Image (cartoon, rainbow, N blue to C red; front, side, top):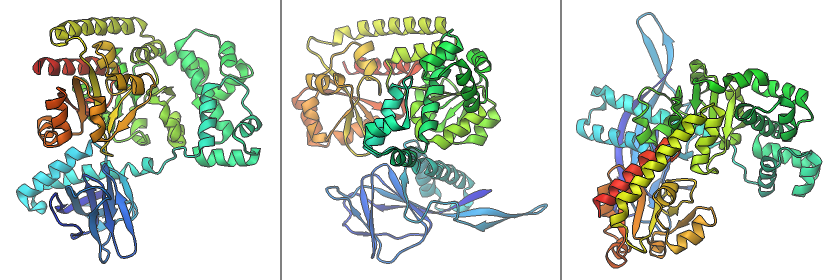
Length: 532
């Protein structure tokens, strides 16, 4: 059993301070910058980007903070704490001892989740109000929640993501042609390696053996067919690359721990854990047992609709998920990057791997509707959404002049502005449901290519739209607007190019599937009407 004690919080550096800034404080310490910084010591230096943090377990000599190249100093926060582990339990006494063995290594840089920013802000405000952390138990609870949130991610952050281009090519080919004969010799030849080296590199890069990965892809396709069609096992075998129905059945049972017929009976279950696609399930009137903290914190419009849903810290919380006794787990295809977690989840319940960020938003809901026997509910929801969209178009018609354009832009941790394609970040809502037109360059470079585009802030005038929806990483959108308008590029966009800025909260617009579309559409229409 672990517990934490808050020692101190500080604003280590801020705008206007002279660089370098000597790093002072108590240890262990986590340092969270709002812009990229470099921490320099006598023998080494490390860069911490925006959206990251570094853990320092002990002090070093001559250590200080400087802004990253090309940046200026911006707020840098620190939290100092003690970590304790339960060492002895007696009848009326619990004895804790200091222990840092469970923490990441000294100097390790990790991702600082977006939804942890609110916890950090609460801790800073509470500490400033009291200056007596020992007398405020709430501070220690907030600290415990924050540290659990950011340190639990270490098991995910160090997991595999394919880097080798040849293996990326092989993985893409397998997913596209899973029903074809896929041999090790064929794939090795395609990628330019001998068979032995290809096998070892594939295992190193993906965490899977080649044969195991191919079987997993095929089995997952068979799951979708078993739930989404009435095809016989023999026909499914032929469509998924298995020799016959008997071999498919044996392999399926090995991977899924259920026979195909037993799996098929779970089609109408409501006992679902949703690692993604919460909005799509809610559109079908299916309320999952649980979903991840990241999804809930990043889908606050949806969160209000499911107040009783169980919140899982991360999708690798195997014991928590097991206690819920789900009959199916709905997961995005990026879970293939975490083979050990996927295999552990499969021990609990069959995992449905749904394409992530690839399908048309309505087709995504239709797919889940077929899988869960909710075809009528699917079409009813889609018809309702289309009616709402028609009403929204009529409502904004008086304020949309001929030649009016619209764009959606998201500020990333790297300080670049992302223009999303139709599958993500409410671009679908803007262009398909509301029927607004994109500026020519966004149409050509984003929507027609089907790829995100990131640009520097100073390049935004090249992609300017009459109505610019800005997804920003704060709930205080008006304060953020005021900061933007202090800079010349935004003054030029508004005052010279006549752009209207509509600010959206990242934690309401990070995901945009199913019911999210309906809720986000309402927010966007209200912003248009308010600023007309």
